[in-house]
Image (cartoon, rainbow, N blue to C red; front, top):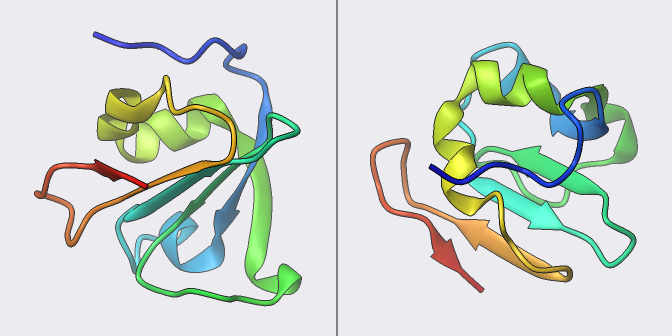
Length: 89
């Protein structure tokens, strides 16, 4: 199984809807600076709709994100629903 190169206590951002359980993780972005973002169906959210959590918390919410743990910088992985395969853009 894949693992993230970053430590489990690495800070990442997640949408409030995902964190509250109202939306599954459907979009994973890995930015050029190494920062990770996890969100659901919602797109183009304002900054105040995101929360800072650890990578470990994200894995506990949905361990299928490990499938895209090797996502290159400046790439996005998405899926149609929580049971679909990840597609890398």
